[in-house]
Image: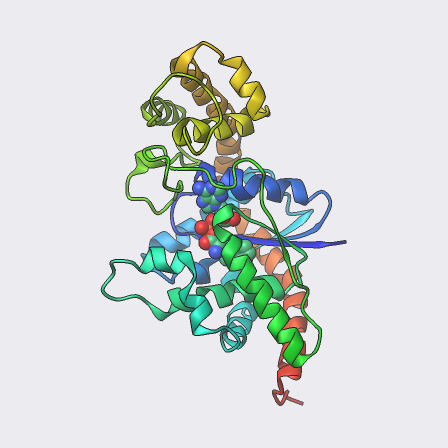
Length: 328
Ligand code: TYM
C-alpha cells in the first residue's frame, strides 16, 4: 500500500487553512493509503515557544486530528519528538543540504526577515522536514501550497543521497488540493491565513465558538463590487471566501457563484458563516470529548510504537550506507 506522511506544527491554534489545505486530505487518504500523521514539535521550537503552551498545543493538535476524523485504527498518529530517529536523520540530512538552497526557502526568508537574531534551527528546518518524510519512504505528502518548496528540497535531498550512497529513498510527491491550497487571511487577501498571525480576526481557529466565527466572517474584508465571482487575481478576498464556502458546503466554485447571482456579498457571507459553523461544530464537540477522556496519551504512545520500527530500520540502513561503524 502506498505510504502517506504529513505533519502539523503545534505552534498556535490550528486554523481553517490547516484544515482545508491539509487535514481534510489526511482524512481522505487514510482510506486508501498507509498513513503517518504527526505533530511536529521539533519543528515548532525553531521559533521561541513557551514550554507550557507547547505541551498543551501538542496535545491539542493530536486531539484535533482525531476530532477531524483521522482514525487511529487506520492511521498512525504520533508526536515527532517521541520517535528519536527524526532528530537523528535530520542531522544526517543537514549535512547533505546546501547553504544556498536553504537560503532560498521563502518560509525562512519570511520568518527571519526583520529579526535581529534568528535561530540556526529555523535555517536547517527543511532538512528535518526531509527526514520526517524520508524516514518512512513516503510516496505522497499532503500539504498546502506553502510547503511545496520544502517538498522540492526533500526530493532533491533524496536524489542526492541516492546518487551518492545507492538507490534507497523513495522520492516523494506532493499532494496539494486543487481548491483551498492557500487559504488567505480574512483581513488581507494577499496574505496566507496563519496561526502565527498576532491578529486573531485574520483567521478562523478550528476551536472558535460559533458566534466568534460569525463575527469574523461578517467583518472579513471584501473586494469592491458585489458579484460573487471566483477570480483570485482581481477579486482575491471574495475568491478566498468562495474557496472556504466550496469546501464547507461540498460545492464547486461555479455552484457557489450561481447560488449568489445578483445577490451581493451580504447573503453570501451570512450563509458562509453558517456553513463554517456547521463544519466545525461536530469537530469541536468531538475534540472536547477526546480531551476530557484523556485517551490521547495512549493513542500517541501506540502511534509512536507503531512507527518506530519503520523509522529505526531506515535510520540503520542510512547509517550503514553513509559509512558509520554500527555497534555490534
Ligand atoms: P504548518 O504547521 O505550517 O501547516 C500545516 C499544514 O497546513 C497547511 N496550511 C495551509 N493550507 C492552506 N491554506 C493555508 N492558509 C494554510 N496554512 C497552513 C500547510 O501547507 C501544511 O500542510 N513544515 C510544515 C510541517 C511539517 C511537515 C513535515 C509537513 C514538518 N514536517 C513533513 C509535511 C511533511 C509546516 O510548517 O506546516
